[in-house]
Every structure is written in C-alpha cells, then in structure tokens.
Amino acid sequence: MTLVNSSADSERTEPVALYVHWPFCVSKCPYCDFNSHVRERIDQEAWRKALLADLAYEAWLLPGRTLTSIFFGGGTPSLMDPATVEAIISAALGYWEPADRIEITLEANPNSVEAARFADLAVAGVNRLSLGLQSFDDEALRFLGRAHSSREGWRALDIAQKNFGRVSFDLIYSLPGDNEEGWAATLAQALSLGTSHLSLYQLTIEPGTRFATMVAKKEFEPLDPDASAALYELTDAMTSAVGKPAYEISNYARRGHESRHNLTYWRYGDYAGIGPGAHGRRLGQRTVRHKKPENFVSAIKRNANGIMEEAALSPVEAADEALVMGLRLREGVDAAAIAGRFGLPDVVDWARVERLVETGHLTRDKAHIALTAQGRLLLDYILGDIAATAEPRALEVA
Image 1 (cartoon, rainbow, N blue to C red):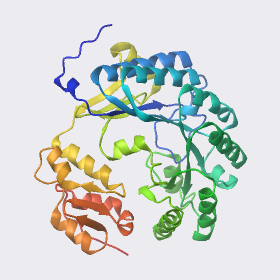
Image 2: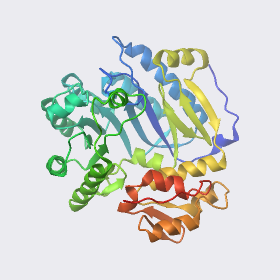
Image 3: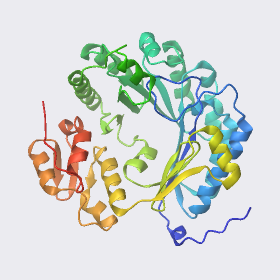
C-alpha cells in the first residue's frame, strides 16, 4: 500500500520519541493498572508484523523528524523475541534520523529465563535496561505478586550491568508495615549497587486492581499517609546525599543520567506510541491504541494502524497537560513559555502561585515555577489549585 501524506503539519521538524507497548506478562501483579495480559501462547512473528505496521503508520505521519529515544514498555517487554526488538529498532532508525547517543530502553523483569536474553537484547540495539526488581525481600516480593525471587533479582542485575552501558531498576516502598529504619537500610543497599538511575515508587492502590479489592475487603491496610510522607522525605535526603537526587517525583539519577525518553514526556515533547493500549502525543493530537491485544491486531488488519482514539487537543488542554507534566520535574516550568506556546494569556493563577510560594510549597523566579521538597508531598493538590482554569481550593497542611 502506498500512503500519501498531504498534511501541512508533516513539514514540522521537532524531534520525536517512540514508545512501544508489549502487552504480555507471565502473571498480573496485584498492584498493576497498566495494560497487561496473560496469554498461554504468543505468536512472535505475528506480533512483529503488527507492531511494524503500526510503526509505519506513525512514521508516515511524522516524516523528517529526529528520533531522540525508543522505549519498550509493558507488560513485560523482556518477553519479546530479541529479533522483534531488533526489527522495530531497525525500522525506526530507517524512518527517522537518530539523535546523537540515541537512548533505547527496554523494561525487563528478573525471571531467570528473561535474564538469559539480556545479551541478545543488547546486540539487538538496546543500550539502557530498566529492571523491575521492586524489592530485595522475598516476603515483600510475594506480597507484590512478583514472579521472581530476590536471588533471581540479584542475578538479573548482575547480568544487566555486564551487558548494558546504562541500567536502572525499580523499587516499591511504603508497603504495609514499612518503617524508616527498614527502608533506610534497603535504600542504602540500592544506592550502593553502582547504577546511575533509580525509580523509587510508593505503593499506591489503583482502582480496578486486585489490591483495591483486597483493601476494600480489609484484607490489608495501606501504610498511613504520614508514615509514607516521612519515607518520601527520607528518600529525598538519602539520594541527594550521594549525588542521585530526584529529578522527577519518583525518579533519581546522577546528573546527565536522567531517562531521556521520560524527559520528553515531562517536557511535553512529541512522542509516537504504538502497540496495544499505547498513548501518544503528536501533531497536536492525543492518540490511544486498542488495549486488548486481539482488538489491536484486528484494527491493524482493517486500518494498518491500531488506533482506537485520536483527538485534537485544545490549547487549554495542551497547556494544562504541559503544566502537569512539567511540574513533576525538579527543574519546574516556565509558565509564560507554556502560555505563549499555546496562545493563551496565562496557564496559572499567579495569586495562587504566590500564596504557595509564601507557604513554602513553590519557588518562583519571574515566570519560572517549581515545587519545593515540601511541595512535592502535595503535588496533586498544587496541580489542581494553580491551573488558571481550576477552582480555588483551601490549603490543608499537617
């Protein structure tokens, strides 16, 4: 099929990032609300063709771009055949001019079978691995429904560091029963392992997950919010002390080792999202792919793409999203630049901003605003309060 793109937007030359969603997992974790599915059999060749077709559609819409990063997320992308990973990377680098030192990340779980694939994934072109360790403790791993043991996790991390130039790993804390002494010991161990990037997430009970059902049935009680806040402050202090401060609410890195791909999201750059359930943002539009794998494949066969929803973002919607994303970063945002980008008089209510500066939750330098350490504890409240379209809210601080 020959495609002809007549859109005037096709002449735009802003860089683009690529997100590839692999929807399959060995099992569904009880805390996970991502688009993941368990299937007895996966036809790797069929999925390779489907993802390549979806990629071709996005590349047709976005010619002439520089590709800054590729991120394979999931699900469990380390279950992908390395040949599929290689084919997608090769196609993407053929469609777009790769940026210098392009970042190509793949998320992996530490199961022994998957860890054995790391060398092949590196040969396929992956140069950054994000490893879902989640905990060093077997009891915690069982609670979290993880399919690996702590021993497998240590082995996977060792293999990853031998095969990839950049390695990050995830930990989940603020589990029921967590305390400052225990988390401090775990975090000290994590910070000693030689990786330049860590993703440290507090356990949240997401609607629709098995954990949400268990909490509703009072099978366990989440950690007290005040205790969670204390653990977050401890995390900030310990990571900063060793030169790996938070550059985003839950991500910590040495300077220059931040996730370049995720920075594209948070700085509100364009990114193409392919694969089941993938979200994208390009050409002033929000895109969502079909979530169910079978529906995604059917859409590919019908339309040569897996899009379920494609909608233009209004200037107010885009500006609000840019504000929400940007304030997650320690660097903050230039509110005037966002307003100018989308042709709006303002994106924040400056009176409310000043009130939060006075209470120590925001800093301000002319039009540049950023959260303080105290403010990061109240991120959702602040985002909902300062947007120019938001209703005034009462500030309640313990």
